[in-house]
Length: 245
Image (cartoon, rainbow, N blue to C red):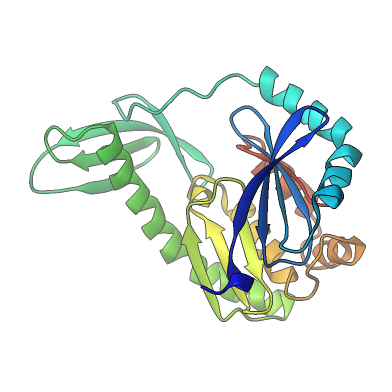
């Protein structure tokens, strides 16, 4: 990796608030609040000065304070124990988990109308059980995305060279317009088809317009008229807050 490609992480004190700064080879500045307590993180171009970052954060202090207060008021999400009766989501529906320990069959079976059967090795702990479920979520998305992507590429009038699924802490998706590549969050497997379609259209529209400006919003309204409602639905159980100047 050469110096132009390096990611540099540092910290900056802004009015007594510690801001994590991630410098990387991008064109625009982004401000995020990371769970669980709303810690502030700035992702900025490599050449941006500390003063420019400080001014951006100061300009958004009211937003930061408001969202941090929301993080504090939000009830804590209990850790998943991966035990019988626990509730998990798939494609917008809630299912009760039922765990089976056996040596011959490992994986997940969806039992209509509301049961998720998890087959694991005898003695498998919660992390191993989560891994089996995670692999199943990934397989379901990988089977689902191609047809949805083909549908919406035709509507938006663009084509991606590559798409991938990965764990993403602070985004539902991302797009590299230059490489014509999109990434989708594994967490989307828990969301409805309407939400998944919104994320796909959002990332595809970035191939027309890189920024979240008025042209981007106009294009979103043209291709997906109810995108704002879908956005709200997607973030009803949001696990991050972000602001993109």
